[in-house]
Image 1 (cartoon, rainbow, N blue to C red):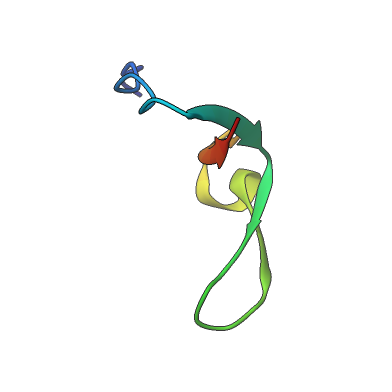
Image 2 (cartoon, helix red, strand yellow):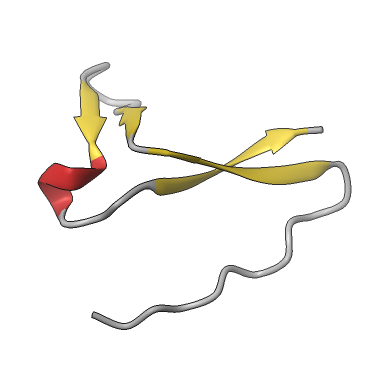
Length: 46
């Protein structure tokens, strides 16, 4: 698996890494491990 760097976060945002996220279409909680990831990067306001 290729390890790629994330682009820099925009001004006023930062990356938070979570092992789960909610699907916007179904509302289900999706776990990164089920998709072969350790965590998903999520942009949040500072």
